[in-house]
Length: 583
Ligand code: ATP
Ligand code: MG
Image: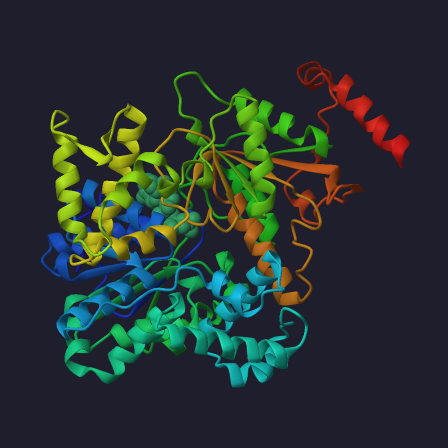
């Protein structure tokens, strides 16, 4: 069938995109590069299939990798006139909603979710420091993602070339087993248990499984390159004879192998999803040819064809670590136009640890930032007060309805706790409204949710943020799927890019794809910054540029006349001499 190119939902799409929206093939996999419209096609497809009467939006499930992505998807669908019919959420959110539904249907208590896996590990290994606990949690996550049980760990770790935290495979396997039994004794589930339990229900409870498949007849998955074997098994279990499945992804953006994702699932999608039709989309709609040329060099590939007109070449700046924040602040301010939004710009770094000092420094330089910690919803006082005032076992739907009423009617005696109005200032109101939006998102997947389970979901989501205009600061990983007109990549040095602990060829290839993800977030401008010396662990150390730096451009030092004036480098030069003297 030739689709009507004039249809509003198809207008402006390329022929390839139109095919992806209108094709009846199932399963179908769309493999396409960054910025080629994969996520756009996913939303258009849901709306088109609904408008043609081919797929009931109320029986459609879109799976995304982060809640932020799920919210964006819902926002886009709303703009396409679909209201909140479509279910959109992460694997975890969908599975948790399923467990809760199952518990309600069988008259049991809803599952209890472990507050913090790290907390439990710290109890089991009191002498482990925070970094060690994080490594252990991560390694257990890898095992669960790969469906590896404690007894199989030594073998699996050897096969995958993994070094367990602490260095001893047998000790780690024992700790993993202790952790599993401790959860069992406390009758709590961690995140991976939620997925595993959902998988178990699909296999052992045919009536429940049939109802789940009926409710989620049409399944779409974004960012399929980062799916792990546990999620894939779950996805397969959700499909029945009447289901349709569309997955979209980009093998060049597979960045969660360290976490158990298996890029082999998209690379050999035809084997894993039997009879799968594969479509490609070639044109890039996001970035200028200059950004795409840099991205192509990073991956050692021909650049994607661009639709955007030419822009500026990427810039590369080298400075001393002591100047980094000032150079960055200046670059951000220089590109900020009065009346435009700060959130047109993003600062991306390889590690979380780099972000916090930069965030503080940018704030000191008078630049509003929107780092997750800065505006994490549950840490905002008005939101925390409200969440405390709502009883844990109360229905989330009735609490939000009541608060919504109070927001609409500011004259009512609206208080969160001890006489505090729920939205005394415009900022507080924005926080409460953001919370309400999150609550409604949560209810769309789980209409019977209690306040307690909503709190758990919020705590698990660092990216539950209130809308404040500010420069986005995030890691390369967190930036996946997002885009900004102007992107600043910082810390482009060996040790960060690639990260020091990437030693195997597989890890190195993933680091390179990770840089590719960062670069391809830029629509118009890409600015890269690296430091030839920085303070690390209280010592000043010389730094080498990233081995991939020259694929982006040649370094320019801010020691040119203009920058020197702006930065007052005399002070910096003094500091440098002092360091040199000390050495
Ligand atoms: P990523 O791999 O980074 O997730 P993607 O393939 O999902 O990227 P989208 O985010 O869907 O790409 O699209 C990139 C940008 O291009 C978005 O701003 C989107 O609105 C725009 N875009 C995509 N297709 C078109 C089109 N046919 N016409 C105009 N803009 C488009
Ligand atoms: Mg996308």
